[in-house]
Image (cartoon, rainbow, N blue to C red; front, side, top):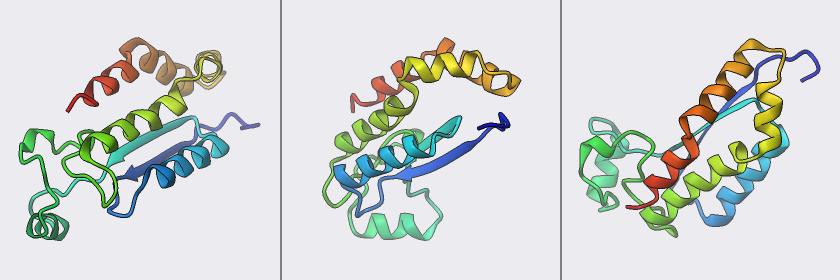
Length: 137
């Protein structure tokens, strides 16, 4: 932070063992890490990989529309979360990180050009609103 180096973190939610609590713990961890940019994705069983075969055989996959296999749509739940709940957790993850006005303003005012441009882009696109729409499965 003191050298204004851009930090980026990526996380996958939706492991079969994930719960509301485990994902809330992840959100708290990310806020403690305080990276400049975070990407969250939903575990997606892409056709052609072993995990897809397992998920299909065990009946975990609920959404068979391949256009939703984009790591932003939950196509299956976890052992304790429905697809809808998992989709809502993805939104909560993004909102907990990008929903802070202080973070947005710090990013836009950063001396680091990449941080500035990225924060302006994220604010301009209304990323959170787009993600909120995905919670309507």
